[in-house]
Amino acid sequence: MKVSRIFKGDRTIWVVFLLLSIISLVEVYSSIGLFAYSSPGGGWPTGLFLKHLFIVVATWVVVALASHVNYRFFSRFAVMGFWISIVLLAVVLMMGGRWFRLPVVGQFQPSEVAKVMLVLFVARQLALKKDQAGELGTFLSLLIYIVGVVVLVLPENFSTAALIFLSCYLMMLFGGVNRKWWWRLMLAGLLVVVVGLGITYFRYDNSLNNQSAQAAQTEQLLERSTTWGHRIHSWIKPNPEELSQENMARMAIARGGFFGVGPGNTVHARLMTQAHNDFIYAIIIEELGMLTGIIVFLLYSFFYFRCIRLAWRCKGRFGALAVAGFGTMIYLQALANMCVAVGVLPVTGQTLPFISYGGTAYLFLGCGLGVIQSVAADVYDKEALEKKNDDTETEALVENQEETVQV
Image 1 (cartoon, one colour):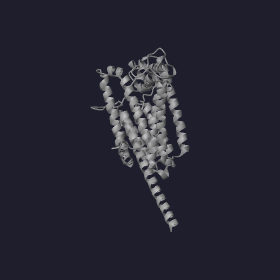
Image 2 (image 1 turned 45 degrees about the vertical axis):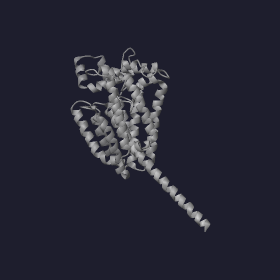
Image 3 (image 1 turned 30 degrees about the horizontal axis):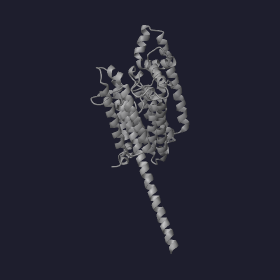
Image 4 (image 1 turned 90 degrees about the vertical axis):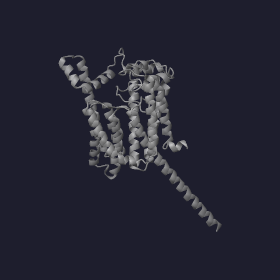
């Protein structure tokens, strides 16, 4: 059986996915040690790596299977999946956490399910309301669904909520909503976010100078906003003498130079509990050099370019918007992770897609990639059929002309 029959879709995207998976296996194996030993009850690095390997293989299976499914099926599943994700988000929020713990999978994050389902749901709604896309009512109705998910995710994960909103909001622009209202809300939203983060930062900064009982009580009540304030404060006013994850990531990048110190020769991953996850890009540069870091950035950029190109070629509105949505989400998440590693952004907690240690985030992003490959397979099959029909018509025309000449 030919490989192309198993892995349908865009071959270039498959190659990018393969390269990211290889980098993932190498770097996770190299950087997972401290996390394993510091986890509750101790851990076995090789065992955790094998779990990651299983997730990577399972994701490949999911993407390959999805590439054989007619992408229109995902449109039918989008509504039910969306409401299931809403219920899961509400339940985990009431439990006061960010995930469920399942026997085999381990930590199961409903926000990762919501990311995938919301993209499919928004793509479906925009496809169904094609003729009303420019109306204010369509804009507001879609916004309600998006904001509803964001509100459920925001209390425990600001960066994921922001990623979900930006990805789906850009989908609305691609889908033809009223640009005037789109830009007005975008500017207003940015203003609210900047002011909110500014207030959070200054409140945290003042609390450092006021350790009264009242301040401590306030901090306890607003624990999550304190985390945001701490991250912004550490980014704006870094303490170079502190052995923080951020500082060690910068040192890892500086040590790696242009060509790196070689796979397995990391020093800073031995000191970072999140080296295999949030800061894996810094370890990539330390071991494989800035050259490989640039290549990784180009891989994600090329992947996004292929997604946008594929969206333009897809004649089905739902398929085009789904590809644009998932491509945008994966690319923005990759940019956020890389920017954190090099110090351009404060810590967000976003993983590097298809490279960081596997779990629900890895698997469900794979579901999004599977939808992309499903659309790609449909586009290329139809283009091949159209070309075949055109060639047949051309040959028939030539034969008719030859017969006319012979007569």
